[in-house]
Image (tube, rainbow, N blue to C red; front, top):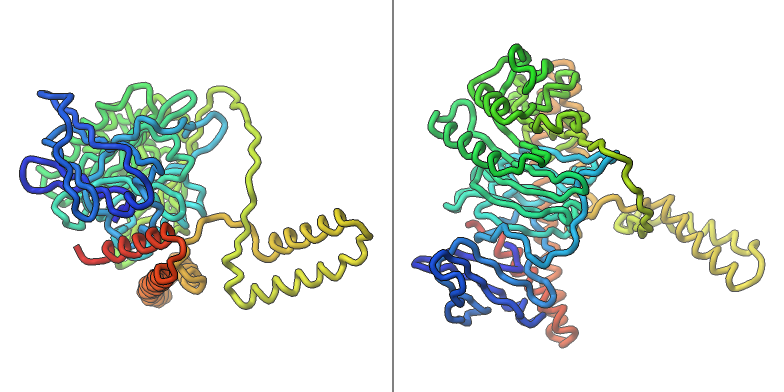
Length: 525
């Protein structure tokens, strides 16, 4: 559950906003609810009610904006794995946000992926997705079938931001989301949750802005009325996009477009897979109507690098996930390829396009970055022993550097830095604190089994690796749940001890709040 702000729609004629008690303990609330309406745009909020926090009640309205508290603590850095964010949160960006950066820049590639992960309502799933994002240097990932309810925006412990849109009936089906890095988050202008199958987001750019529509279309066997409704809503979303923007329609569209592009050369390439189906006809029609191009079928690749879905039996595969770009910026799409090495326990592969805007030479700015070493690896006894031995050998050579305090300090510092770089390596991703090292090794083992299954040449070997992969996947999920439970139990004990000793009241309140928030989110809804 997002702990910064909980917004619920209650019975009756009003909307209720709840600010948790922890926010009142850690900072002074300086904001209120601002209500916009047709009849009375300046109408003041309703009465204030105290109930384990502050409740602001207002009459029904189009938009509800809540100003920031002094410490800007509306969205906490939290663990998002297996937690279902509840309640409806506004998709409006704060009017006092910081200066936005550029998402697409000239001569600089940007990776905006699309992936059906089957579910994010599962313990440890978001951590695995973020890990693959860091591995493939993905700035923005459009997620289909997230299975989160409601809509809102949250920030994870890895400083990534997730905006999501799901069902309103508390049924964990469908759902779409966008996961973005801190850099991409700074460039976001606005976003809009439409329903459990569509959401849009707009990002700033130095020369051109980017609008992204994330989709999760009904299957080809769905009812005609359901498919008609989806494509009508998609067309309405496209109509709202400014014509000068780079338009990207990404996600699981459940559409086979085939390899024949006769009479449709402007919207299709000739490198598709299979035969076009009804969903494919609908998708091509909407592309021709809006001068868009299906990017996954205009680049020549092997079949395995174009098909995005594999059936549970491992025999059938199709190209049903797509990246679509408007024709005006067609040449900015440099490549679209399936990354089969990415694995989060889903039957779909990661679809990754490479986008680069060519306008003029970009001005390169020199930035000094702080190097972070992977100190978490010292938990491994083998790596700890290797680090100590390497550092001891370097210290033995310090006697030959001569005299002088400055020389001794430089040699001491360089020894530690060089040993950390050689043994630990730099920190390339933000690990979840509660996930143990052996659990990450188990996740790597599962990924290796997936590669072996895809490279198998016979059905007997494929069946063998499929069975091993299934068992490893179950063991990984069990281990993730165990690690998370042990981590938060330890945090709760630490917070209680700190409370007994009356040490650092603010730290105790924050730790206890994070523990209760995650325990509440794990409860079945």
